[in-house]
Length: 138
Length: 494
Image 1 (cartoon, helix red, strand yellow):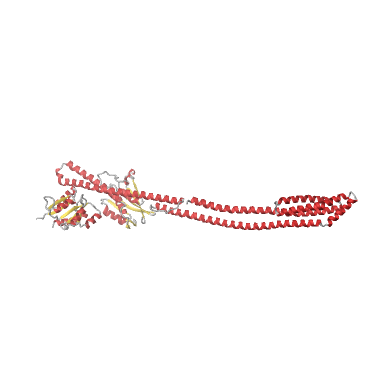
Image 2: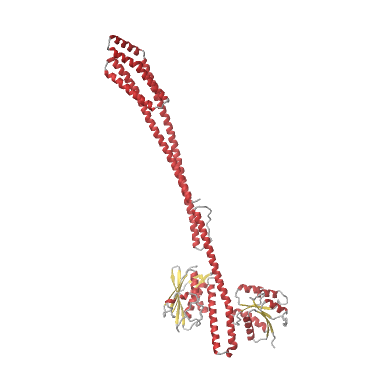
């Protein structure tokens, strides 16, 4: 039996959330998806503060950069600064093609970049997505 | 100090110097004239004093002759000499100022002549007149004659007169000599003053002329340099001007003008950058929602196509078409906003290689449409990216818009002095002359809106790339006869 992959999606845009779910569904894998719409909510989820949700440590995090309250960079910095979560793979979901954004995320310890819209054949997001898939099949 | 003031002051200073020179020379000539007058007066004095002495001798001779011979001719000579001497003496007195030494001498002379007449001539003449009356009278005359002549009085008077005249003329000669010396000294003085003043005027005039010429030309040269810099697009130039002259004012006006130009152009640049940034941001932000709409429509199609009535499926297709068009427009705006933002990198570009690259990577191939590249396309040291963009857009248009099964697109070049003119020519549908201007405007496409994948900015970008570099794009086309686009590009580095 395949193991259930624990994924956390931190994304404020509903359409982008649906898109991620649909993409994952197409892979025919077993997964559990926790969704947070901003950085603070993600922090609560990670700490297990939200009612009725187990404080599982996700296998990987998909992180949007542009969010209200606490943006992707700040959250990434917080995750990497905390011993409990600093080894979680964090993939940056972004529409941004600014090299500065990528450089900053890399500096903060991002594991890879996935360019929105999610397309498996898109050359720029290929490597990151393959890495993600490898993780899911482990 | 104002230049007009400097010029006026210099002019008047030199004029003043020359006026002083002229005045001094005028005074000198007046002095010479006075001197001449004094000389002629002195000549008259001397001549009259000689005449007086000669007349006195006539008087003495006339009196003797008459007394001895009784001839009335002698008494006539005597009388006229007296009359003339009277006149001469009056004239001399009138020429000599009262109280002067010469006047005293003249008064003495007058007294001496009077004395000779009263004491000598008159008694003798009276006695001579009586002598014819009787022998007694004759004897009286003879006795007087002997007494007067024997006394030596006449000789004394004559010697005194001679002495007085000698004094008088000596005085006159002395006066002449002193005048002569004074005149010579004043001439020497005038000459040297005139010489120095003239030299000073000439030197000062030359120096002032040189100074003004240098002052004006150096400033004008500075300002010409500045104006050239402004014309070349450097508005930060500045002429340092502290003075109050008209040229300094002009320099400051130029500085102000350059400052205002700089300010306005900086403002324009800033506004253009803001506008570009705005276009970029807006386009970018609109992309998100558009993608969302497209996603949702795709999901509906993927999940529910079979459940939906055909009309709904048709409408969904229209939505996707419109979204695609909006995305194309945004792509166009972003592409246009990017033009000219790249760094201008120069490298060696082989045009034939560049065209091959365009065909390989940038143009979707069309069966039956062929590209012919002229073998003599040049190799240039120039910017590669804009050339690639121009050829991609022009050749792309020729392929995309070709309306026949088979066709040919030709690329060739001609040398035009400093420039090359590159041509992209097709045998496609051609463009009516009424659209020749319009096709270069943004979002102008001559096809139906949904029928075609076109950003509508291809030619606008070509035009912008070329106009940014002050180059030209032209087109020649007639419906049914194909189109030829051409543009100029420099042979050497821009």
